[in-house]
Length: 303
Image (cartoon, rainbow, N blue to C red; front, side):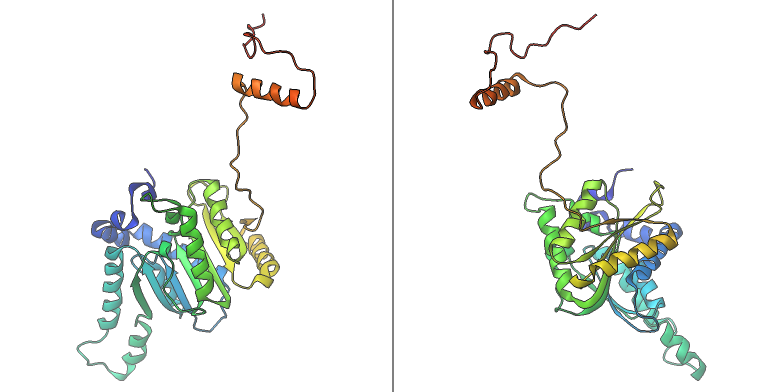
């Protein structure tokens, strides 16, 4: 099965049919719930305290539902209107589910309030930035959405520029003590490096946590970011402690990555390369054999 990111824009892939199927699959619901709980764990939010959390790529609201169960207030944004419609229906159902036409006994008030949704929705493309005021959110999560920024759907879209714009806006709207945990599925190791490099370029500290690194299907990548530049060491130390407890591997996102592409060594050198090499040696004053028609000709195979 090909990756959804290769089929086109996310809003086209997650149409009404796909959104309904996405939300009705018990396997998908359980996977999203497990990933969201892990992301909340990595956020290290203060216990017994309500936090204002941004859910980027919220989809049908499965991750937002987990945030509600944990007692948090959340705002979800997604590029697919059909996915947001499914999330809106769930929020509306939670508002009307226990209403019973306005008639409730006294004992049901607490139960009704506990099921009220604490989320709000926004239709927005995260690659164009995040339209919120600075220092608004206490934390941020994103489940299975960040890798979409590594693909371009038109000639005007540049993945690196979209990533830099996204991370710079995310850095601005989070409070200084806030954390962001972004779970993603990189297609290649280069994509994971590009994402980490863009995050550190705008000021984030942190790294990539990989759960089940030796498993093909269960492997999960979490980009754990901190807004406080002075706390990069503490972030990496806390991530190391998490690694010891849950047997995950950590790779620092702040490692130096060169922009030059890695050139593979070729066993056969071309004639142009050899002539250029000989010319360079001559300029350095070294004795080099003259160029002939036999220059760069391959020798016969040895017996």
